[in-house]
Structure formats: structure tokens, C-alpha cells
Length: 258
Image (cartoon, rainbow, N blue to C red):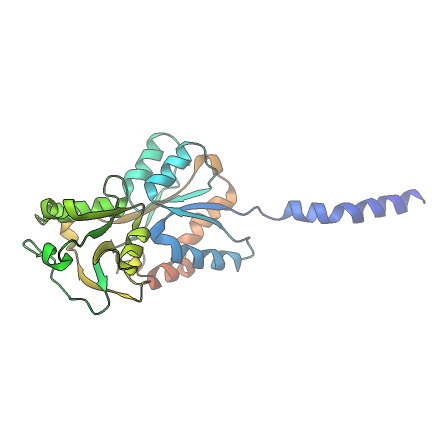
């Protein structure tokens, strides 16, 4: 076989490997559990731009932040509160200049469909709503943002002392929602966006915005996973196509402000 034929044969054999090497690698996103449905849609929209689907890991923001601290590979972190993003930022684990507050949320009380509607205010009869032996499903208030906001709200409304002995803490806000869906708790504190994906439940009432700190979602590129593609994804999350998905899921976005 002549040299030109050998070169051609070698090129044909190597071309599939070269083509695969040129394809962009999938990005890994660590995102708060309350972003589950929205980020899955975002992944599909991102894929439609010619990018590979995102690798999505959902859990409590605290859990994800600790995994990043321990070296877990991630390109982007989306937290459900400022505290855990601050933690990573202070440790130098966030790429400089990439932190953005993209979303906001609301805190609500959910009960089974057909349950009562209530006005959540000082003096609200939470014990009466829970009934004898009933527990209040919450994300763990010791470290999970949704639980921390819930504790703030109950405390400021003068309800924490009555609520604390009757809590059913869960590992994240979606797990708290599941407790109510399964009938293991007669009520739960979750985000409005979580309540919207539970057809068997209803929002009994909303917590006053003044009863807790603002529920803000900061996003940032992780320093160890900082690539041009990761920064492009962060930019994409602030564009109209992504904002429309977030807004449809009940989040407040910077452009909508509602």
C-alpha cells in the first residue's frame, strides 16, 4: 500500500476520535433542590443551542456547598440562599466576578387538596391546623435554606415555640413536600415553586415577606470548574429563553420583577 493510501487510512481511522474530542464536554451543575424542574427544562433549552445536556445534581444548598468544599467536580453552583454562596466565596472557591443573583422565591404553607385556607399572621392557630399528633414538614432548619427561612418566619410571627416540638425535618425542601404528599404530615412549609408541582396539595397560605429574609438564588461559576463554556451557561441563564422557563415555574426573575 502506497504512502498516500496509508495516510488516508490513518485519517479515516482517527477521524471519529478527533470528532469526539472536538465535542464540548457536558457541564456539571450543582443546584438547590427547589430548582429541579426548572433546571431540567433549562438543560433541554441549553441542548437546543447545540450543547450537550447538563449533568444536574440536586440537593440542599448546604449539602452541595460542602461537596464543592471537599473537591466534588462542578462547573456551576446555584444556591437557594446567600449564606452558602458566601461560604464558598470566602473560601476562594467561586470564580471571581461570576456571582449573580438571578432568582427569588416565596415561602408558603401547603396542605392536602381540600384542606383549609388560612391567614398566616401572629396568633395563627398552627396547632389547630396540625391536629392531635400532627407534625409540620420542613426542610431541616439547622442548615437547609428553606428550613432556615421557615424558622425565621415562625419566630418573627411568634409561632416558633409552638412549632418546634412538632417539626418533621427533611433533608431538603422537596423531601418536606413529599412528606405532605404522602400524608405523613398534615402541613408543610415549602417554596411557592415547589407547591406548584404538587397537584395533590394546595397552598393554605403565604408567609408575609416581612417575616423572613429575602429568598434570593445566587448563581456562580465554581473556580475549579471555570471554563468558557461554564461562563457561557451562566450568561444563558440570564437570557430571555431561560428567564421564561424560570418565570413559568413561579420564580421571580430580574427582568420580570414579579
